Amino acid sequence: MNSPTVITSLLVCLTLFLAGGCDKAASENIAEKTNSTFLQLAKDRFSVRYYAKTPVEQEKIDAILEAARVAPTAKNLQPFHIYVLKSAEAISKINKLSRCAYEAPVVFIVCYDKSKAWVSPFDASDNSGVMDASIVGTHMMLEASEQGLGSCWVKFFNPKEVTAAFDIPGNLTPSFLLDVGYALKGAAPSKMHFAKREVSDFTTYK
Image (cartoon, rainbow, N blue to C red):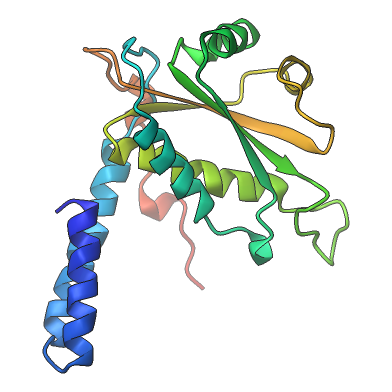
């Protein structure tokens, strides 16, 4: 079941439920399929390091940005700003600044504004900027997969150099890059991709 179908089914079931025509079992069945669909998407996604030259359609870029827009942030302060690199000049520039841009046709620079981020009342040096940007980036990364695109989350760059190269104002801090594009034929997950811990290894119940 694809996402639009899941959403439509949920809306239909909600309408029927309010009218007394959708039982609990049907609702749970839809929820089960929704969760299964998300888990499969999360499991299938891998970091792509080889991209086709095929341009990414604007509507797919828009969908990725919409996924960013609806991402939750601390107190809904939304302290993020995203630079969309897609011109030949911008792509050439970012590839000179990071070897991990991988010649992707689109690279997002996801930034956060420390002055707008939530600040912990317990530690003034602890703000939500990196956390919020990471939630936004995760939404974007998974929506890229939903759109049939590959992606790679990149931290290998000098923030000062990127800030200077793209005239990013001082109130914004580049948190990471997100390479996006159509995976080159034959692109596959690295061996490290499959080295996942068991749930019992990282879980403690109290």
